[in-house]
Image 1 (cartoon, rainbow, N blue to C red):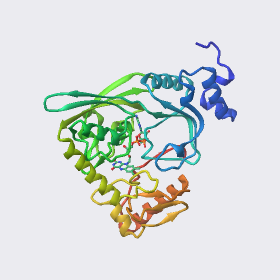
Image 2: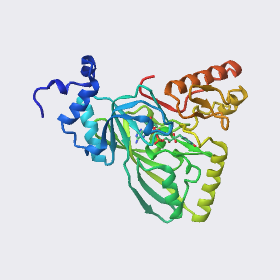
Image 3: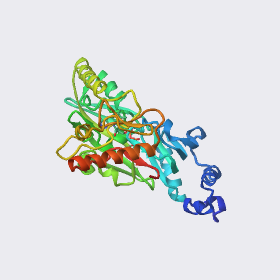
Image 4: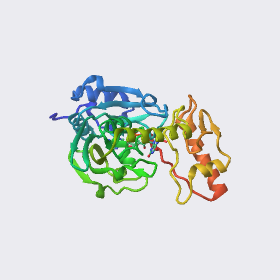
Length: 328
Ligand SMILES: Cc1cc2nc3c(=O)[nH]c(=O)nc-3n(C[C@H](O)[C@H](O)[C@H](O)COP(=O)(O)OP(=O)(O)OC[C@H]3O[C@@H](n4cnc5c(N)ncnc54)[C@H](O)[C@@H]3O)c2cc1C
């Protein structure tokens, strides 16, 4: 424990006042010998390399988290030094600001899958950094069914739980049993699914400042061939309907209350509308795609004009499904 704080140990707010935030955060991390492998820590890391939209300025400090111990260490360090924390899973539902992300960004790469077989069902213990697509394929190979509808969602388990991600009439909440987290002081919590306040693309974890570390899923048994065939049918459908050949963050807007958002965008004549490098996909009006050189500002401006036009033509309010990270 340090008795007296040195200049380099000022909190983030104090550093900002001194006007040299980047250097000081690096110094704090180096001087306090943050117990994380140095190859997991990067400064001024371009976020476009870590998100499916391929857009986003630098994270002031980007740390890849591989164990729960590492996560706890960084959370306590950030709490003590009052450094803001941003959480990233697989980066498939986020738009990162062109100005980047201040403080520490944690990329959650916790891994581990344990299968507990029962007579009529299987309980799967999964770390939150595992990705849905390979998990669904892995389980299908072992004759475990129930993830077919969700098997094309490109997120991590942690991100999918927070978003209550869903597809083809099924949502994460339908297969979850428990969700475990660490809070910002490093304390662990476990919630039964009933306490997670799941609804369409919503969970309690959107308001709690906790990091999802692991989940348990309750699944059934089936025939590998049949499960894989169903997954392939869904994958073909996605390929046919979605602009998977371009970077995006999936559906840009949420489903409407009593209307299909993408259909209204299409009827409003907005397919193909562009702003800088961002474009409303011609294949699927619900997707805004990055044609290669889009900025976050391009995407935001385009989403605003789509929202305004739909409001003007149909009197309907459409909300973003993608989450904004950093300053907008
Ligand atoms: C081509 C494409 C298709 C898609 N199809 C679908 C679809 O069919 N259905 C659907 O629902 N979504 C879909 N998505 C969106 C996205 O894949 C899901 O929302 C997914 O669940 C996000 O997971 P992620 O790990 O990528 O989260 P990220 O994008 O990394 O993060 C999303 C949010 O979750 C938070 N978060 C991430 N990990 C954790 C954690 N461990 N603890 C706490 N918070 C965390 C982040 O802070 C952020 O607020 C699609 C996206 C793409 C690019």
